Image 1 (spheres, rainbow, N blue to C red):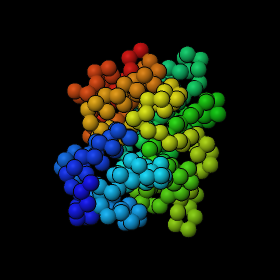
Image 2 (cartoon, rainbow, N blue to C red):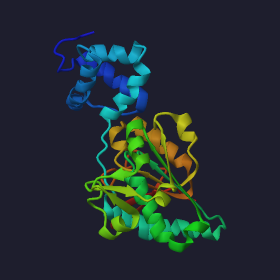
Image 3 (cartoon, rainbow, N blue to C red):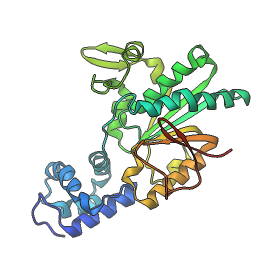
Amino acid sequence: MNIGDPGRIAEDDFSRLRDFIYAQCGIYIPDNRRYLLENRLANRLKTLNLKGFGEYFFYLKYDHGHRQELPRLFEVITTNETSFFRNTSQLKVFQERILPGILEKNRKSGCKNLHIWSAGCSTGEEPYTLAIIVREVLKLELPAWNVRITANDLSESVLGAARRGVYSDYSLRTTPKDIVKKYFIEEAGRFKIHQDLKSLVTFGQLNLNDRMQLKMVPRSDIIFCRNVIIYFDDAMKKRTLSAFYDNLVPGGALFIGHSESLHHISRTFKPTHHPGGIVYFKEE
């Protein structure tokens, strides 16, 4: 164990911590982002009164409190920057093209069920945005449908915030004003999502590196996993996308981040190009 400067992480300690994090949740931290561990774990070392990153690794591996520490580790290494109606051009494709098509297909089959999976939901802005769009598209037809949005994240802390459903105006910075007025209650400068909207979303902790957990997610018509796989190496990306493919019903759609691509990662999905980005389909 190399203690050294508590503010800097030694090469062997970085390798151990990186491998440990990867084994736990599939997030891969490349050599050129060593500073990320130094910056984000500094407060954990201080809180636990540890002298360096080597001690922190041994704490994670062997201390009796390591199970309680894992959620804290996940929280500090993941980025939770998000907002309602993030990437409006992509959501426009979802609202105007993809969702109506899947709803019509389900109508014709006589099955008015719709399941959407938000994988990597952070503090809830994405799944609540999807719930708003579903309500806007179905309108008065909504009560006749069984709509379920499953929202998962690695961090229990962000899931707690998501379940509360109370946001600052910063989270609503990209949200149309009429939508804010229609679906939120303003209280003391905070914005609370309407209860009937919350009822469409079910939040739960999930590790995308745990295949048993992934198999428990209900089959989905649509999966949103935006700005998540960028943290994975190619092997983890392939495992995750394979799980998504297995989860989707035939004809189901996958949305990933607008700057992300499945090129060279997966050929199982059929890409369709739209002005707002690429949507990937599981062929029927």
